[in-house]
Amino acid sequence: MRYAATALGPLLLLILVQFSQQATEQGDSRDYYVGAVVEFAPYVDRKDGQATLRNNVQQYANFTKLAKQQGADIIVFPEDGLTSYHMPSKSQLDPWTTVIPAPEEEYVPCTGNRENVSHALKELSCAALANSIYLVANIAEKECCLHAHEEEYSVDAPIYHNTNVVFDRTGKIIARYRKVNLYDEKAFDVVQPPEIVTFDTDFGVKFGTFICFDISFSVPALNLTRQLGVRDFVYTTAWFSEAPFLTAVQIQYGWSRSQDANMLVAGYHNPTAGSTGSGIYLGTGGIADAIFSGDSQSRLLVARVPKKTPGSESPPKMEGNAIPSSDRVLENCYKMNTSAESVAGVYIMRDNLAQFETVPLKETTFNQTVCHGTFCCDFHAVKASDGNETSSIYRAVVYNGCRFYGASVQAGIRVCALTQCSNDSVASCGVVKPSSVTFNEIRITTTVRDPANILAYPSALNSSLLPFERWTYSEKQETSENATARFTIALEKPTSDVSTFGIYMRDFDRTVSSAPELFGLSGIILPILMSAFHLLANNRL
Ligand SMILES: *[C@@H]1O[C@H](CO)[C@@H](O)[C@H](O)[C@H]1NC(C)=O
Ligand SMILES: *[C@@H]1O[C@H](CO)[C@@H](O)[C@H](O)[C@H]1NC(C)=O
Ligand SMILES: *[C@@H]1O[C@H](CO)[C@@H](O)[C@H](O)[C@H]1NC(C)=O
Ligand SMILES: *[C@@H]1O[C@H](CO)[C@@H](O)[C@H](O)[C@H]1NC(C)=O
Ligand SMILES: *[C@@H]1O[C@H](CO)[C@@H](O)[C@H](O)[C@H]1NC(C)=O
Ligand SMILES: *[C@@H]1O[C@H](CO)[C@@H](O)[C@H](O)[C@H]1NC(C)=O
Ligand SMILES: *[C@@H]1O[C@H](CO)[C@@H](O)[C@H](O)[C@H]1NC(C)=O
Ligand SMILES: *[C@@H]1O[C@H](CO)[C@@H](O)[C@H](O)[C@H]1NC(C)=O
Image (cartoon, rainbow, N blue to C red; front, side, top):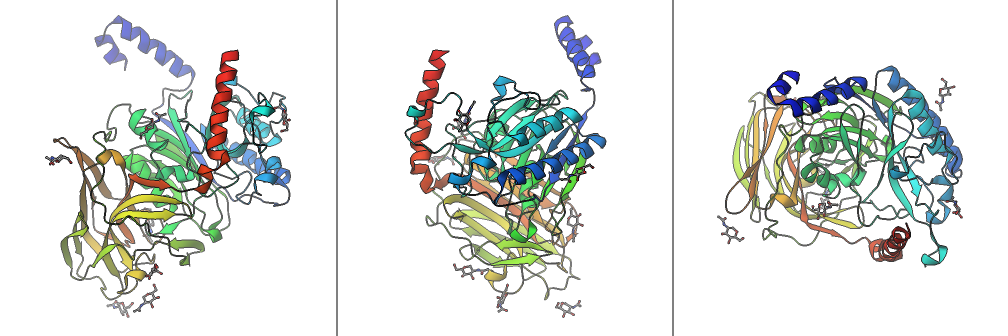
């Protein structure tokens, strides 16, 4: 750095020297930071929000101390980890919530004394302060009523958010992010307009943050990567895994890899309901550590995270025309099957591939273009000839259309993948079990005409419900008259135990949110009232 500076003139030298002095004071000379995540199984007393919060926050404090002993700079706890996801309905929610002062107020709950800031929020702040660590937690937030003139709310229900809060090493609130893409969470309100939240650290890394279902949407996650160039993320989740494309670690690593972003992911642990999966992901640098487990334990993961060099190797911006897709085959969205199975103690839902175009891999070598309507994927796969071909069956599966997520969200998806089946029926595909087949080669490619609308997750899964490694993935934007992009995923070496391998895409052009609450009072009227109110408040200042 100094060498470069001498060549670049005195002004830049001055800036660099100041920067590096500051850096040394703050320990920023390292080319890595130490991240910690907790896969957390919350205590819950459904009748007593305060007791639930008290118990869990004490466990958080204990984990924070352990993480600090292992050198962590930042620790992340999962979505709903303090309250559990067994919260009561909105009318009963108040004791489970807290007011969270805005970061601009530079408030330190540990030493402050504000009304309506909960004991839990104070204790989190104290844990960050006592251990001199950045701490990220998710908590049910009550939007602050402090400045509210009651008559300006024509509705008497308070506003609640599913919120990530970030404390710095002094226990100060430095970020507050309210979940944008709620997943059938009726007690919570959507925030309008969506907030794109980042925070800076004394180790020179800027983080973005988002929550659970947000990973499947463009706003705010892709605003952070594609528009702001953020390369490090803290992500809280309480996921319900679905085979063969949407299991927790598979989708987390897929996002990290496609965006080439470091990602600290803390997952809620309740495997009998399908919730497990946490990790520390390094984008193209691989998986530092990950867990997907059917046992009943909370678990702390700590790993070094190499800093991404700004600007270098950043993922393609995927700009270009948002060409309305004329490739649509199906406008009717398919629903998930209720079928599910227990895999090593984890409840796993199964995708419904009935409307997919599928071709079985019968021969040792499979070279075929498979299309669903006009959307096509090129497959090249070579099985080792010594595989037991009667015991492990695979299909190439392709889809371009839409599906339901939960009860109310319809989302555009495209899929190009190989997936494991247990017999010749398509309904048996998506099964996750050990396989006796070794693939010497697999390469899958596809081209999209509207890359700005697409988020692709490279998708790999083995029978441990973890993404196997040693494959390459690329998104190449082709500059022609119309923006197109070519996506390719390929094995780097012969691989056994493949459950899924391919590319799973979200197509934002087709997302429809038919959530009825969006059209209700809390979704539309309140934000309008609130922005009117903020205008008033700002004018007064
Ligand atoms: C946290 O640690 C303290 C001291 O080691 C212990 O007494 C307490 O039981 C722990 N609390 C929880 C909730 O695990
Ligand atoms: C605390 O909450 C109560 C009940 O919602 C409200 O009436 C009061 O104004 C709040 N106080 C502050 C300081 O926000
Ligand atoms: C986020 O990105 C979307 C396009 O994907 C854009 O419409 C929106 O304005 C962006 N939001 C912000 C706050 O930048
Ligand atoms: C192949 O798998 C089938 C079914 O699992 C099994 O019955 C058979 O013995 C296996 N053959 C070899 C050669 O391993
Ligand atoms: C899913 O449901 C469809 C009908 O909607 C059915 O044809 C298919 O067999 C089901 N798949 C599984 C895995 O049960
Ligand atoms: C195929 O496997 C499914 C379970 O995945 C089972 O329900 C079905 O009966 C099997 N079909 C045949 C023809 O064996
Ligand atoms: C699945 O992949 C993970 C991560 O690469 C690896 O640790 C694990 O051993 C693999 N499991 C099997 C059964 O191959
Ligand atoms: C570009 O897109 C336009 C409109 O969709 C189409 O008419 C034209 O043929 C495309 N050009 C190329 C080179 O694909």
